[in-house]
Length: 82
Image (cartoon, rainbow, N blue to C red; front, top):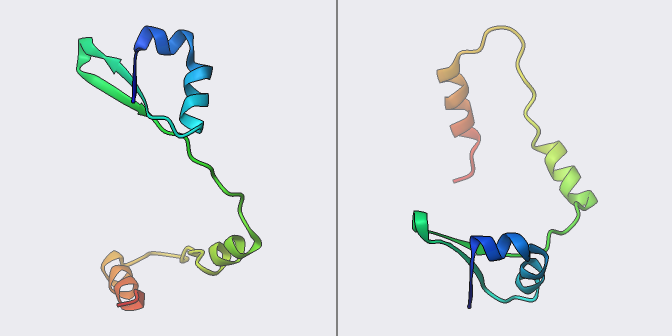
């Protein structure tokens, strides 16, 4: 686990990001404010066709006209899986 001051992190951020990408724990200290920041790198997978289909199937379509909020909440609770 490596600790860096905020000034060091500002001057050498690209190398700290590379360390986080390799799985090393990188902590940035800000002692004047008692703050420690942990730099974490994660991989994000691209959206698949399945993701798009799921989102489309679960899209909420707005109602036209006035909405009874209490009734809408009851309906949502009735639709939720138990």
